[in-house]
Length: 143
Image (cartoon, rainbow, N blue to C red; front, side):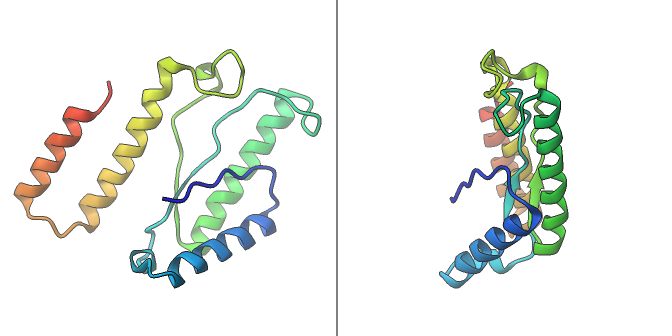
């Protein structure tokens, strides 16, 4: 699985990056990526750790919101999914960057839920097999 951390990009830069990445993945025998909506990218979570380019928390959060909006628009154009993780600023650790340990399960569960739904839609499994997968998922879900 390829994971890319991208921030502070313009819409055009993000568009170019995703176009090149999708083309590379599709051309390198990843046939499953040719199906509609088979790629998921997580939206950027909140962050309150300011930097020189964004000296206030408000400017930083506006940039993150703008990026996520552009990512959503781009997902329609390039036919990929966006997973919005259920994390807010009150769930950040004291460093203002990372998610507090008490809330990290929310990220894990959101990812599992997302791909469980997608697998249920696209999976040719029999109903019995899907029940077993659902039971396995429920046993391993963090509460």
